[in-house]
Amino acid sequence: MPFHPSLLPTPFVTVSKSALLRNMNAMSEIMQAHPAVRLRPHVKTHKCVEISKLSLTVGGASGLCFQVLDELEPHIKRILEFDKSKGKLDFMLTSSVVGPIKLKRLKDLIELSEDTTLISVLVDDVANLQQLVDLKIPIGIFIEIDVGQNRCGVNVSTSSGLQTVESLARTILDPSNKLQYRGLHAYQGALQHVRVKSERSSLVQSQSVATAAKVNSHLLSLNPPINSPLITGAGTGSFLHELSGGVHNEVQPGSYVFMDTDYLANSSPPPFEHSLWILGTVLSNATGRACCDIGSKAVDLVSGVPKFTNGMTSEYLTDVVYESGGDEHGVLNPTHPNVQAMSVGDLVYSVPCHIDPTVNLHSEIAVIGDSGDVEDIWEIHRSCGR
Image 1 (cartoon, rainbow, N blue to C red):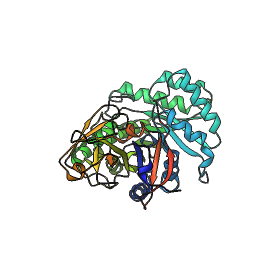
Image 2 (spheres, rainbow, N blue to C red; image 1 turned 180 degrees about the horizontal axis):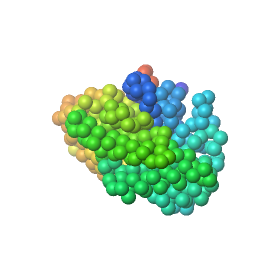
Image 3 (cartoon, helix red, strand yellow; image 1 turned 180 degrees about the vertical axis):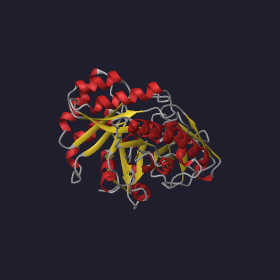
Image 4 (spheres, rainbow, N blue to C red; image 1 turned 90 degrees about the horizontal axis):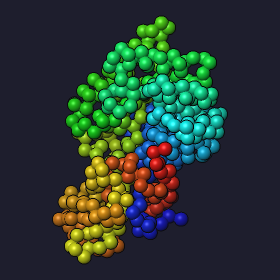
C-alpha cells in the first residue's frame, strides 16, 4: 500500500519515478540520433537491479557496466528476472580484476551465468591478462588505454605503449585462449566536470577521442589488422562530446538517471533533471538554526555539500547554507523564510553534490509516485570496492 514519505525512517533516498523515466527517455532520444553508438549505462550510480531493468527494457541500453564485483554479483544472481529475448546480456566491469580471491569470484560468476551473460573486464597488464587466460573460461576483454587521467590504462604516448596494446590484443585473439576481444576502453573521468562547455569539448577531442583514434589506427595498420569492435568510454558530463568526436561507438554515462548538483553546475549541461533527493527530518531548532539528520553518514561531503530544495523539485533554497554537524547531523544556517519557519519533525529535501558515493551510503530507495506517496522500495546493493 502507498504511504506518505513522512513515515520513512530518515535519512532516506527518495526517487521520483516520473523524473527518472524522463531522464531515461531524454537519453534514449539523444542516442536515437546516433544509431551507430551503443548506450551502456553505468550501474555504479544507483547499484539497483530495478533501475538496471528499466535501463534495459525502456531506457535504450544495449548493456550495462559496473565498477566492481560487488555491483555486478547481485545482477548475476537475479539474472532470470531480466528479459533475455534479445540474446545474451552484455555486462562489463570497468576495472581490472586483480588478486586470487577476486579472480575466483569472477570465475564463479561467469560459470553461473555463462548461458545468459557475457561478462567482460578491463586489462592493461600482461601478467594480469595471463591470469585471466589461466582461468580457462570465456571472458570478454577490453584493453584499457590511458586517455589523459593518468590513473589506469596503457600509456600509449610512446611506441612501446602501442606495442603493449598490440601484444595484449594478440594474446586475447589467440584461438587457444577462451577470451573474446571486445575492443578499447577510453574513459577520461576528470573531464566530466570541466565547467566551460567549449573547454570541456576541446579536452575531450584532444585527449579521449584523439588517443582512442591513434590506438585504433595503429591496430588497423598491422598485418593482419586488429579490429576493435567497440571503443567505449564517456560519462554524463562528456558523452555528447564523445558522440560528436566520431570515434567512440559506445558511451557509459551513469549519473544522468539521477543527476547531482555538480553535473548541473557545468555550463550547458545535458538535458536531464534531478530525480533523487535525500529526505531528512528536522531534529532541533533550539539554536535558531535547523539541525537535520542528514550528516556525513547520509550524504557524501568530499566533493561538496548538498543543496536543499523546496520539496522534490529542482528549486534550490538558495539562501540555505549547509554545514556538517558530524556523522548524523547537518546544520542549516538559513536566511530563507522556508527554513526559518521549520519546526522539529519537518521534512527537508537535499540533492547531493556527488551522487555515486552518496547512494553507496544507503541500502534502499523509496520510489515516489506522481501522487507524492511512496509506491515501492528498491534495494541498493552497496559496494565496498570489491
